Image (tube, rainbow over all chains, first blue to last red; front, side):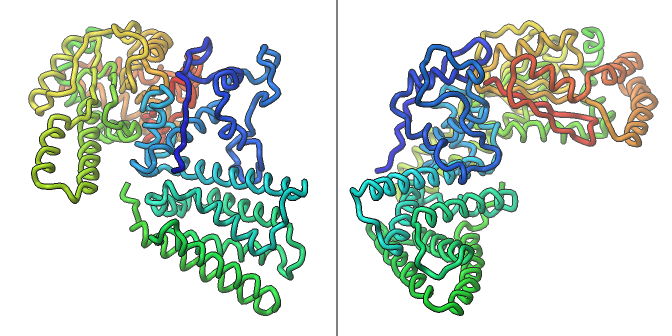
Length: 297
Length: 261
């Protein structure tokens, strides 16, 4: 199962701050969490405006106090650490302050630290989405390198899209029960800009790596088509009870095939755009119904 | 300051209601909602005399705990009656989920009134009453999850010392919350507020509590208190992070929040 093993060392008190750690300590004591650190380096395209690029030195750090400018981690970095730790508790508590409080506890912080975040769990969800997108980018980058080195075959577009969307959606599996709740929170007016920008940059990423020049799609249509495919597949996945979600992947295969077929006729491309928009509207209504408008808080 | 509160203790709640036209209850509710405590939180309420914040905290935590238990039960739909019964038994003794409030006040009279109120309203578990000075708290370091001071920091001689003490007794990640009268920036409202403060409040003080001077002192201390931004800077200087304030009623009252990070 996809279990996030976060082994954070007990937080040490430092002169100026009780919790914010020296960036150097992060490297000395956490040799086994490179994945959680690295993802903030890849593809800033997927990042929200308030997430700053990681401060201080990264892999090339010497550890002798050479870098003086950014010694301590920032509040934002600490918040990200708390949110990452909180993900482990989401299957049990949902995308809530409780999960964040439990996450804070594992880092040695008081449960009151969850007060730093909004009470509806928005930041936790957005953090998760952003992390997943970063992981996807990393994956696609690796695959591209293999192709460039000649160690792998370049996949045809439809297979590429299918695999990319499947990989991304599989990241939801550990949280699939609570995902409808997350989607409904992402639809709150406050979260729509961030949620949408994360979605579109992920879609753009996939197309970037697909590197497809042969179809007749223009850029907007490509984005719209893949967004439609992604969103509808996501919804199907939420209601799929087949073993290992095989129904979902079959649905995905069909949608991608439809999209490929449509590239041949220009007028069909236009109607696809309209159909996709309608599909998205319908999807939004479905999500609200699925989540039962969980906004009593 | 001590004598002001000695004479004021018994009539404190009544005066609060009449001076603020009962809105102080809403302010205190907002404070606890902002805190959003989860069960298991250890709260230190300083200058909390008559227990207003403490009681609200207990109510809130109890409600959250009940919801938690209900949700747990919903997932246990396939249990036998015996198991459900056992679940209820063990959870009953845990209605607060280990949450606790320590009410600390410099004034014995205020604490006495608070204890009486608690008894009268039926609050027994999870409450402690301690005599202490905000500038020198009788607690160890890193003890509490949340530190609140509602309408008390104004009366502290050395605010910076009180803030440092707050920082000391909070756990890493702990939260500092301060509810206090502050500055109204809106000029029209400011004039009306001044009128009300200086003309009406001391009169009420005389009529209800028989004490003009104490309430005049009160109004003047409000005017002398640093405004929102200045208090925010002081809190930041003490070492708190993510310091922010929220104005209630256009600045008549403000809630400052900071985290020990």
